[in-house]
Image 1 (cartoon, rainbow, N blue to C red):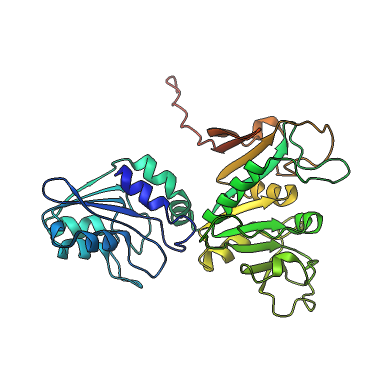
Image 2: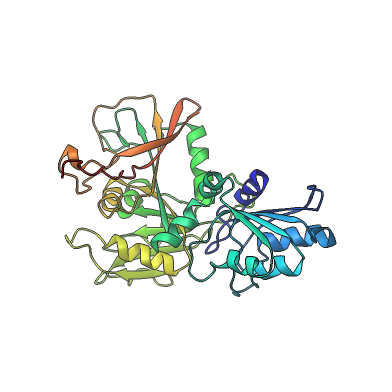
Length: 361
């Protein structure tokens, strides 16, 4: 199963709107006879690749899959049926499929007499597939907020300069995150200050993510690097924004936030989800990040912290609807890694624990 999890990770960023899935087939003696992973939406699923590699040696054997085999016909047939037809005697999967359209594969397998087990290395499989699983459970894309800052939390100096706060190693790692995401999102403030390109560089064969600019008043220039043909780009604007200067640019008009400041984050995420986006890398800046935090739409935070101090300048996070320390968004740190001179800290929102009932009540 650990091998199946590693196989699934090979396709991160390439399978939207589908999950990443890995599969290993063992013959009746327990030897590995087939491996596969889902490579692109519309192509064969992991189980089909592995069964093809195993051929007749799959009959009577065991399939280990990171996600419950699908039970529906889309652009490809149901994997549960493919396993049954191949004569697989036992299926072990890590994580149950939470999507209403594809779930039910385990029941189909059991009804056909296949032995089924679940939960093996579930945490490891879930960690690799967290974006798609979050999307399936919440009905919106998974959002990772990434930022680079000094140790005192500044993403730019008092004069506005920000290149380069973090190291080359950190910047290279950001391109890995972009390659694993379906969309990269920035606000107009970042666009105007940094004029970013947002495409993946330095990773051969990477699928370029959708570049999304949240530009309420459509201030983007038609010559902006983010509008070149390296990768697709979507510009999200307000309902009454003037887009006459953007002929041929893919734009979407969205409602304003309830407070009138910026666009409605839920509407933005719904639009991206409808376009097949299942994972978002939020790259800033602080105003847009604050809006995402206020909307409860940040699933993971990845901070690149440089060993430097500025003492003044732009903070990483702007207004986020938090007025008192009691309302702070608490996080659980899941990883700390050194990248050159920097630290990469990954954290997720703390899941509230149930309060024990009062014994005297």
